[in-house]
Image 1 (cartoon, rainbow, N blue to C red):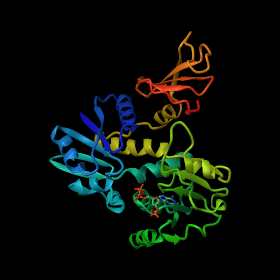
Image 2: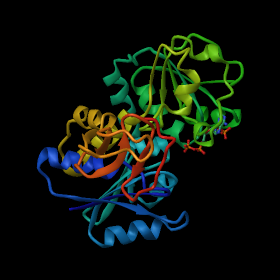
Image 3: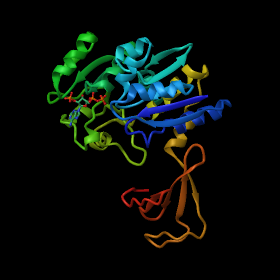
Image 4: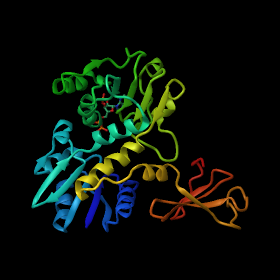
Length: 315
Ligand code: ATR
């Protein structure tokens, strides 16, 4: 059974690791690859995958809107989001789903952050924000949206009249949950939002960074009541895609824990090429046991398995 994730870039996607770990958990034999598509080639690349007997495709940036158009039929979540992150080829049709919202709600629930009647501020009004509005409203949350370009937030209000639109610079305190759905961090930019907005709020970033805190979390953590990046959402949206394809819901906690705390195997007698210490070099393995990184416990030396050295990476 053939599965894949398609995106651009795609090299660092954790989806193969996660889906193969789920498959091992329930005793299924699958293949799950990463497919890099040129920005204008989504349709033909996806079509080739299914022609070659692919069953399911996960879709990530920048192709979720293309995938929505590609699908023959779309579920209600993907219609609300205008985007598809999961395609299931079945009986000659392509069913399009969006499991991001379910993934977010499942992760917020796992964190113990109540949603019913919660005052939630979503910062951002792009594709990522659009995908989470309906699932949060469906949980009984009071939803407010603030975006740098106010007109985009107003356009989302036309689609979801229950949300309230606020100006970014005029934001102030009083939120139960603040969700960052902007791409500011990707561009190494700070959010132009008053710090008090985050005071005592539970702050969630839709993106994740495995080796360090995301730029958003770094910006707000001294004010926030609690913080989380989106790694749990990634695992939960994958679990829902897995359920759609295989009709069985996998366990997510063990997979999330393993991603957060990769296995380290120390190499006895090895000497660190940077600090010279002995017995401090370890190999890090992914969920499937494949070595992904060699690093030193005593200094910040690390290299990937192709020998590319990164001394910035703090271990
Ligand atoms: P995505 O699909 O990831 O949501 P997108 O549709 O390009 O990507 O949307 C990016 C979001 O990040 C938008 O809300 C954008 O604000 P604008 O609508 O004003 O462009 C927001 N964003 C990007 N860089 C930002 C920055 N430096 N400060 C604030 N918001 C930013």
